Image 1: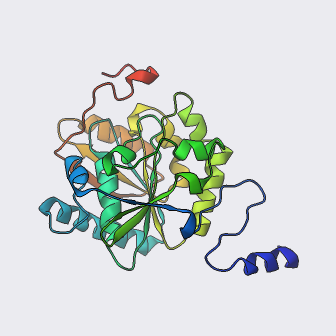
Image 2: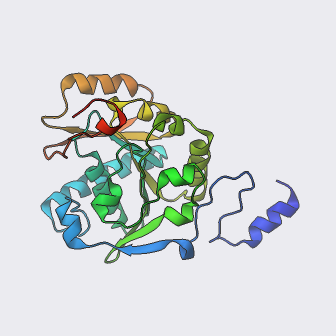
Length: 268
């Protein structure tokens, strides 16, 4: 880096990310991020229970949080992909609850990114307003500061990048230079923050397989009655080179009606 550019970046101060002259999205400073207060009744209606610590189900997510963080810390990992074999396993509920449980730790911070470009659910589960999301940043229709929000519940707060439906070409976006540039920015500018990516189901297309090389680890969610042994074995074939921190077995399923039917996958 030349001395002039280095001096300019130093002058920006520790709370302002450096300008990225190659067009890479910038991580917004705190003053640019919209704060949204989450509603307790809505969270409970969507099974987001890890915001307080008193709920028995919430304590299960706290146990998962401890196990995941210990392994990620031991290995110096930052990016965690949460996926499932098939729809209806509760991966998005798990992503939201795990992120909220981590956010309750005073010395931890977390970013939750909805990277399910075919059926994003994080916005719905948390009760966040707006329509633009992760895809708008990738295709240049919005800055990261326009879509990133700080979701707060009492003293608990976490950063969230909601999802946005991609009507076609989701795997191409996963493999795009825009995606790689954005992930590099998040890794560089948010070094102290765990980043959880809510991914689509692994066996519904090649989206997850495409992005796996850029993830540090995977949390695989299975659903009783939804996930077969054959499904798990098929996922295992794709996860030979990516560490799996845990396999979560859920007994509560999400509705699977026409999960990807609109996009021609033929599931109903």
